Structure formats: structure tokens, C-alpha cells
Image (tube, one colour):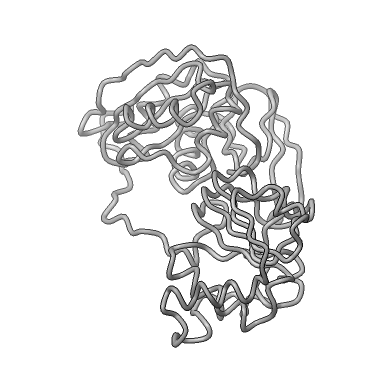
Length: 326
């Protein structure tokens, strides 16, 4: 079993460490700047990696990458990629190149298949296959458990400028014309690096409109608890928890969220947690790096003042869009 993690400019994608952990610490880092990505991976989780292969393949070209990687992956029974944009793009090409089935959107990988999410994340389906397969693992599906250390770095030669098919003809490939920074207001919560979320203790529509403006100003995505989305204040795409989105941000700010088990079960293990709540003994305050005993709405208004947002529009564009989902 091995993980394949696509790399751009030395940056690891969301879910990289989870894919490596699921594969037992064996990974191929493929793309541009893989040496830097290997250093980042081993620094972030020094006991996680058993063996890393650095496949420096240049600019993103998924068809060419898949053809080159398939030579290295043919001996592996199970190939796992993180279910992020590049991983979802590369996985079916690797599966086709290897002549294997693809199990997409997995929450758990097993030796003879995977448990995958279907019907918009509402149903878990267990799939069983005979023989080798390729799978994509959803970010936030598992914690990163340490594997025995023993890093063995290996390098592959750069990809040829022109990849050809078996009959000698040049193979068609995707071209990257431009890479745009994601809009935090629209980014999938599972891929958000910073999240500011509100619960029942924050208030109603006006407070969440202010939350949207603050989130935009600090480059964060907006999240919410089930009580908020069930009440129609935000769309269900913004719901975090075991019945909503599973996230793994670096920073999680919880405003007026007590920390019910269903919600906490969906926030993974953020590097930093900030909680604002009047109940100093609630679960979210207990797990916070910074716990502020205060009214969440008043604290949010004060933060908006500090950011100079008092005179801004009350409803952000993405807050309106979320309301349209209900």
C-alpha cells in the first residue's frame, strides 16, 4: 500500500498526512518542489513516514504524471491519493494507466476495498474489489497516527518534456494556464486553512452577517453548527460536524459554540483553537488554546470595529449565497 501526494511548488495539499498515514507511512511525492514537500512532511509528522519517494515531475500534467508514476506503482496493491482537486484529477488517470478500479471519496481504506461516502455525504457504502485498486481518501477522515520512523528518501529523474502513448503518438494532456487563490467564502470547508464558526450562542442573521464580513477580512471560511443551519441562518454546506463537513483547519475560531460531541467530532485536530463563550466550563472552552469568557456577539462586534468593518455592508455576498441554499 502506498500514498501518492501531488505537490505544487513544494506545497503539500490538504489531507496529505492522512493519506500517508492510511498507507502505513509509504508515500510518493509527485510534482514540483518535492524535496521541500518531503522536508515539510517529515517536520510536521516526524514519526509518520517510513519511506518517501520524491518524483520531481515538473509542471502539472496529470496524464504525463500518471504514465510515469504507473511504472513505480505497478507493484503496489493499493494506491491512495488525497481527495483534493489535484488528487481527484490524477487518481482516475493512474487507475486507467494501471488498469484498476477507482474507489473515489473513501472515508476508510481496507485491504480488499473501501468505505466510501455517497449521496452527498449522507450514506456510507462498503465497496469490495478483487485485486489491486486505486482510491481517494477524503481529508478529515482519520487522525494522523504515527508509524515507525525510518525515512528512506529516493529521487526519480525529471519527466520527459513529451510523453508518448504506447503507439508512439504524443498523449493529450491538461494544461495549467493560471492558478488562482481560492475564495475563502466559497472554498470547500474540508480544505479551509482558517475557519471562524458560529453557534446558537452567537445570535441570528445580523450577527452571522457580521461574521461573514469578519471572515472575509481575515481570509477565513465561515462555519456553523447544526442548530444554525437547521434554523436557516446559513446553508447546510457550512455545517461542521459528524452530520456535516469534516474539517482540518490550522486555525479554528468558535463563537458561541458549546462543543457538542457531534460538532467536535467534525473539527479534526486544528493547530490552534480559539473559543469565545459565556460558559467557561463547556467542552469547546476546555479544548481551546485561547478561551475567552465573554458574550460571543459582543466580542464579534468588537473585532469588527478593530478591523474597521462597522460601516461595511451588513450582508456579505457569500452569506447571501448560503441563504439561497435553504
